[in-house]
Length: 207
Ligand SMILES: Cc1cc2nc3c(=O)[nH]c(=O)nc-3n(C[C@H](O)[C@H](O)[C@H](O)COP(=O)(O)OP(=O)(O)OC[C@H]3O[C@@H](n4cnc5c(N)ncnc54)[C@H](O)[C@@H]3O)c2cc1C
Image (tube, rainbow, N blue to C red; front, side):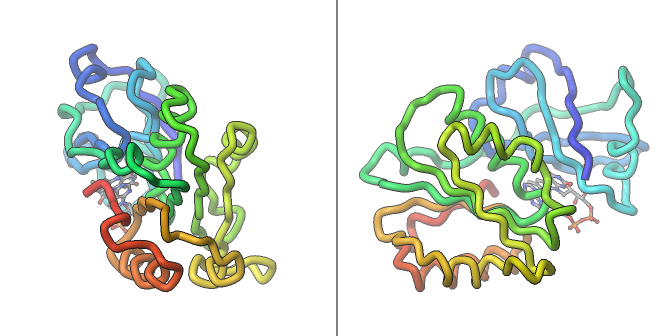
């Protein structure tokens, strides 16, 4: 996966209001949606692109500095953060692979605005530590009070997210949870979090 930063016209930057929103990027004649990995108000847009055989991801992972790409306006509703204005006592973020991109936007947004004082735990799934995006930022996130739990399916010293939840047994009865990843991952998370007491209305995603 490749972490890229794009400058963008002011009207595009201004239309980015909530973590979880995404943009259609076009490169090599093909278009696809990519979630914004930076926080609203950052003055630029960052993305985490999974290098794929298909375009435009392949071309986006090979951009040269200064190269231009076509982009649409910011799309999607983003994450519904209104839940966090209620009686929520903890926020749990669940990411599979490049799905951590919009959750990084949420982490940075909450770090910058300091709007709430609710503890955040990020459960980040990957095959192994070599496949963990934004590993180089974990120290900064941790210093800001975010707990990162790596869920590494193929690391004998770690385990997948369901097993890690079983080991740590978080009390989710008054929590909110946000997930991003494949549909199968979402179903796995939904089933696992029900076991730990999360009310079904408290599990959200960005699409
Ligand atoms: C709303 C939306 C956001 C996307 N954001 C990204 C992104 O940030 N980075 C990326 O590499 N591809 C993202 N994609 C997928 C991208 O649009 C192409 O489908 C992908 O480049 C095609 O490669 P692939 O054949 O490997 O597809 P797949 O194997 O289907 O890969 C899709 C990848 O996109 C990720 N993804 C799916 N939905 C989201 C989402 N809402 N937010 C973040 N990641 C998501 C998945 O975790 C997976 O890693 C997103 C798709 C959608 C619909």
